[in-house]
Image 1: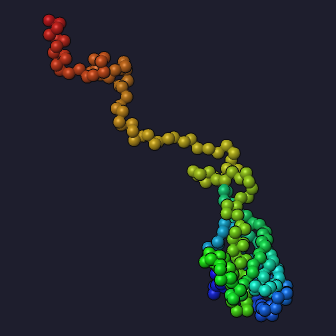
Image 2: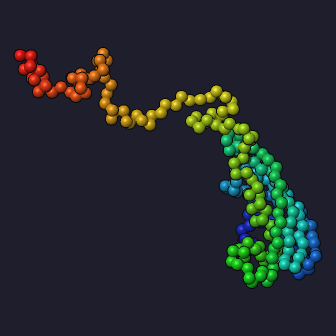
Image 3: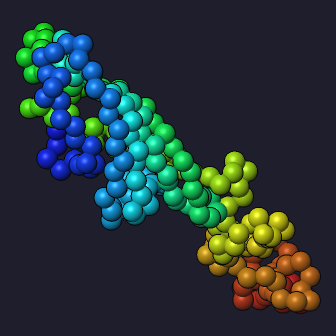
Length: 218
């Protein structure tokens, strides 16, 4: 079961719902602009800049099972292109919808997995912080691009390829350099086909071979 976290990522999005609890049909509009807490490590490739804000507009409505919260959250994102690393900016708006359920209204026949998906209303406060935060993280692109056909950077020197369309590097494959010594050395310059001392059969002449040839000449 999901409950209100003591350290909500957006703590200023807690709304008092005491006037709605136990009164099905009661309704109240909500609107708030909050400053985003500075984060040492943004949760996504693009995120809200330090000192940025989120505008939340929605409504709280009392229903038999609990308090329903729905609305939108809008903010301005900053980041960089995942290919060329140029700075990026974008405006984003997400929709949130959630039922904060009274603990006593959770069906006993629910499985453990189903209960884990239920958001519990604790006390008389509706905390939209985790809800809005998670929706924003999911909506932000994992690999933002300045444009779909961005050429990115050279993988060898980091040059921006769009600035130099003819940019390239002569690549020499040295993976087989270590094998050169296994195949012997090249023939000496001026040698005809076979190496020195070769009798034409592919084997080296020995002293015994030379002696046999001398005896045959006699």
